[in-house]
Amino acid sequence: MGRDFKKMEVWHISYQLVLDLYPLLGQYPDFEHRNLVDQTRRAVTSLPLNIAEGAGCHSNKVFLTYLGYAYKSAKELDVLLLLSRDLGYLENDVYDVLQKKLEEFKAKLFKLMMRVEQEVSEGRPNFHYYRPDLHVPVERVS
Image (cartoon, rainbow, N blue to C red; front, side, top):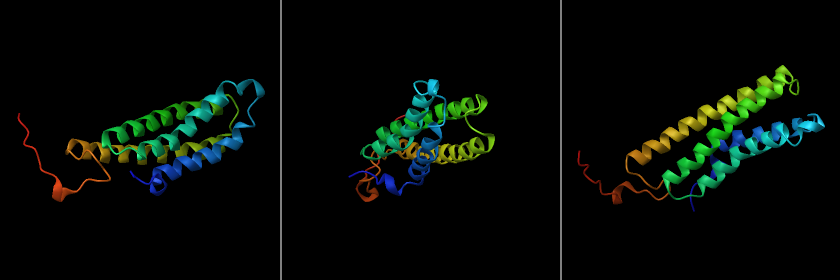
């Protein structure tokens, strides 16, 4: 069964970023549609898609990998928005709103990644099915 991505705040923020950005991309010049627009679409849609796909994994390590993909796409989107602003395709106020949402997403995603990474380091390999009463700790040999 995995995690319910629709209950994750980071998924909702990323999904809203897609909805906010898509209409703006139609306003870019035609010559950017096979370059900057396509790349921006891939980067922004990668955010909620990777979170949703990773949420379907039973392993915390695999989930963390997908969260990492989303984080890297957020960094890519950061540059794409900056380029769009500096090339004159996004107004400063629009850029500022999108950038603020993206920064909120990255901060919350990073916090989630740290939580999942902590679970992995504690030997909790499975987020959804982990039951402390059934877990037998293994002594670590130094």
